[in-house]
Image (tube, rainbow, N blue to C red):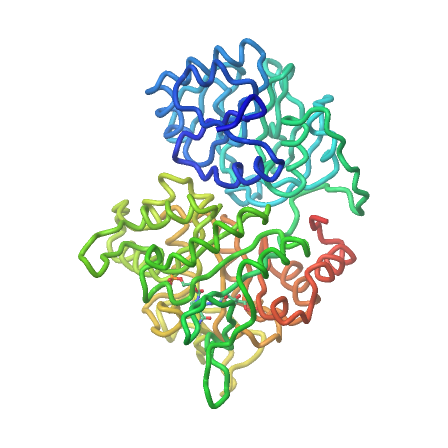
Length: 533
Ligand code: 1PR
């Protein structure tokens, strides 16, 4: 709906655009969805977000004549804001599943980051901009961290430099925003946190922006501090935030009830205000009941994404499913429902273990696993694999055929080595595959990130499993999120200084209000570790 105060939004249907809608609404504006090429030509202000695969987006735009309309609209210098893929498609072409032709308005070819530059791919997290020319909409954020989540990027050249309004350094200097006249585009996600000021500047040019003073100038990719909410229904059917103690969520009381640490939407909203860089929901009984049947989980996501402007990840029960009436749902359908409800990323636990076991046995990528299906459509940066390993001590590293490490703390019988056995169904069943083998297999299969839990450390508050996190973060070139065991701020600086983790996640210390998120970030800043303030 919406009169001329409405913002025209081109939602081509395969990306997660919910967070943009929520941000525009948050700014008090209506949205008019593009239905036909004429809607583009008649737009007063046009936003083109894009998440996922370049080819998928260009296919849709070419089929329905919208690519032509976009070229015409932009050549008339009408107010335009492209986001993420919405910047990339302005270029000649992209190498992603390519080469695929873009709109060809800006000289240059979009290419993939090269992990040999010492950078993990995808580029996920909060990084710093180097502003090249006055771009009006960037004024507020010149020294702030903004959120990137992409594997491909355009690079500055003699031919396109007149367009470049900012670059970001990640192995190389790539184009983080362009501007010419009223045509703007950003590689990062303006709907996340400080980026909101970009939307405000673009949509409400005469609005006054509050200059917030803050400490610490953004200089490089920040380490992320993530708040995790394990949710499940308690015994009278309410969806509550719970927390395992080595994955056991039941209180040691006579009622043995499910631990109840609060309400999901409220807690998530509080963590956003407290400065969490991301929020994760794990539907820990998702493996039992069908997530789409589990409407409260989708409802939680819709409400949360309306007020939480940092990336949301949802996991639990994402796999193919046949419901009680024999209706089959592919994991892609399940994941799409989560994306439509506002998730930026989904995480897969048990189903990724089965896919990795199959792949290690056959060496064949069938393309049928949930991991492959979802990363093919939404891009691998939208797919996290959650690993639930249990430490298995060994007297010698050759006792089992799985990768083992020398452990810092000896085992109960003085064992010097351990391997990390993967489990499924929330730690209930051990599988014949190690965390090392799983991580490398799922990276091959298209995972964009690893959430690395540890059953032994979960809920103990004695620190992360440094041996495990070092083993895995050195084994893959995708980002690894350290998880399980955080008890104090020092545990975060320890894991970032002793391993190559890109992020650290905690649950209990935040739910029980023992350690404020801000105090973790102040501690990391004091230790010289880059964090987003
Ligand atoms: O197998 O695809 O249905 O996914 C299930 C998801 O739920 C997986 O991500 C799995 O890790 C998670 N999960 C299943 N059961 C439990 C449980 O606790 N009984 N949570 C569970 C696993 C990981 C985090 C926790 C960290 C840090 N816990 O929830 O935040 O361990 O906790 P701490 O900071 O309090 O130590 P699928």
